[in-house]
Length: 468
Image (cartoon, rainbow, N blue to C red):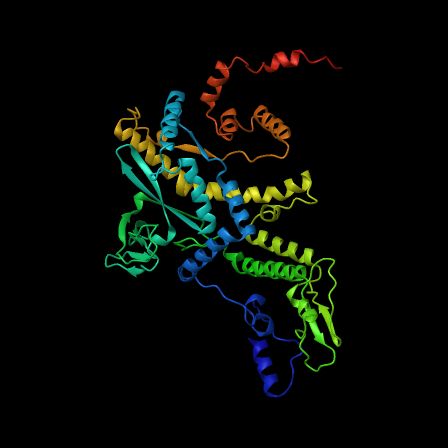
């Protein structure tokens, strides 16, 4: 207080303080030249509600038309689910585990209500929607043969429906919450995805128990997802325009256009006479000799190209890859200069990000609810024999979801590392086998029935020459 009072007196008397008053502030919130024109970001859901539809539409355009972005989206979807994330039941009884996985695999073949794919194909579709649209919706439809899943386009969840309800609940962008903030329903527009023209019909309220909503939240309070392509939409569009301009410049240069210049400036027509007219009529061909009338000259265009073009394009691709959270070669497909060590170093942080999405988003929001719904349906219909289901439901409804093991540059080293982990007690055969998309019991039964069985390790070791 004393320091501030002294400073005020010095200002009034025209004196300057010996030391400036200390201020505390974030430079990122400062104004002036550096802060002028910089955008700001408000609460997450109002921002998503305002921009979500436009961002989604532009992201879809890029995903279908831009070769770099299309390649990146396909690689993201492949990294997230691969050939399919498989369940491993956690029931303590081996026979029950086998029965559970058998029933689920049978259901998986017919999981798609539209009959276009199976459960593993639906996983790939959800992963692609997650990247392109920022969210994916599936409607669980009960049929005589058990539950089926139908993908719903994100735009059919009524984004315009936001209001407060009389019972204390509220609706945000088509998602209804109760007074405690729990999701209770989704309001879905009854339009066909194949409709060519927009039609109006009131949204249909569907219980949240029958809707699976998958999205990766960016901040607390987020209700709807936003496209993962949002950070690169404008850079990708600019990059498109750059490559189009460069291509057009190359086309113009290849045309070898010529411009006739009247050196005398008297405006004499070059079409006066058969010989002169042949200049334009015959065009310019390899090896041809053309005559110009006296006083005329010809000049050819030579479009300029940007300097350091290759480095500039590479920088733009690196920027797109960074915005998409992918290694650069996942966007460009260029492995020039890459080696085994650099590839592994680039893939390690990416795989951490993939696992974060798999176990933090796909498993709790999508895979785990599907497993519980299918197992419960099979038990209630009598298709699955579970007399102790009520007392031990947690054992039946629990399962580990193991994504496919990432493909390795050197499979031999990866296999040796897996064997070493099993021998060291750091993992189990069940988990190692499940990561390859197999069930342990099925694999053991198949090996037992195979006439070409692998030889026992002890026998293999016995044939090795003795060493000192």
